[in-house]
Image 1 (cartoon, rainbow, N blue to C red):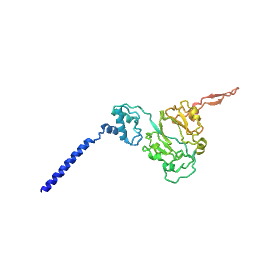
Image 2: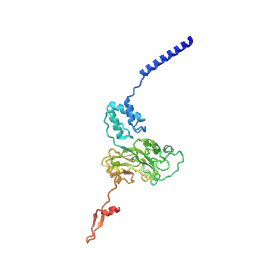
Image 3: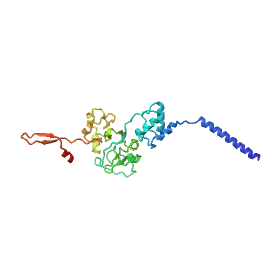
Amino acid sequence: MNFILIAVLVLGAIGLIAALVLYVCSKKFAVFEDPRIAQVTEQLPGANCGGCGFAGCGGLADALVNGADAGSLDGLMCPVGGQEVMGKVADLLGMAIANGEPMVAVVRCNGTCEHRPRIAEYSGLRTCAAMNACGAGETACGFGCLGCGDCVAACQFDAIHMNPETGLPEVDEEKCVACGACVKACPRHIIELRKKGPKGRRVFVSCVNKDKGPVAMKACKAACIGCGKCVKECKFEAITVENNVSYIDFNKCRLCKKCVAVCPTNAIHAVNFPAPKPKPEAVCVPDSSAVCEKVEPTKEKEEQA
């Protein structure tokens, strides 16, 4: 009986000592977590898409709290929640946040089946990453879209789809949250995030081909040839030509569309602009001088058009 009592006392003493050690360790090595982090995380959409530049919503919440303690939330943005969510977070943290311009994914390739015919057949793993690793793909352009839809698979918001007629991905700007998942998924970097622009209007070069003009045109009829006409036409220094391809800086572009008109290959695209007004028709007035005068189109002609 004494042996049982001794064993119980020894085990009890060991348990007590272990409990004391664990208590001391928990106090000494305790990691404090600001309760505001959990509150901010609840306000975020929970997509964990990585579009903010952090591993997930928890990482962004931690950065937002640290930024609030430092006195600035500049550069921190949840692309999925947008200004509405960021406004709630700013109110929660007692901070003001600048209104960031909405962004949207843009596909910078116009190499449709018509412009860029297929010259080979790929029979391997049907992904853009695998096809890109094997070479130029099924066309002569080694820079354009491969058409396997890695960007479609990467999008969590059903905002990008492949067009079966053109073979190119198309972005639904109403669904796009500018998370950047499609940008990371594209092995040829033809997708980029650009400012959505006023009324959704934007101008960009829909080509990333770095080959010289004749080589680029041989591979794709709609390729940028780096001629520089757009650079000379732009009065705002928004366009540069580097590695034989033009690029429009959306921070400098004033959406005048003059570059669109001078591009010889129609590689510059203007999106969501209203259709141009019809030009006045030349009508000959039946008189002795037979002078032709320009008159505005009548309402009947406009309605028929």
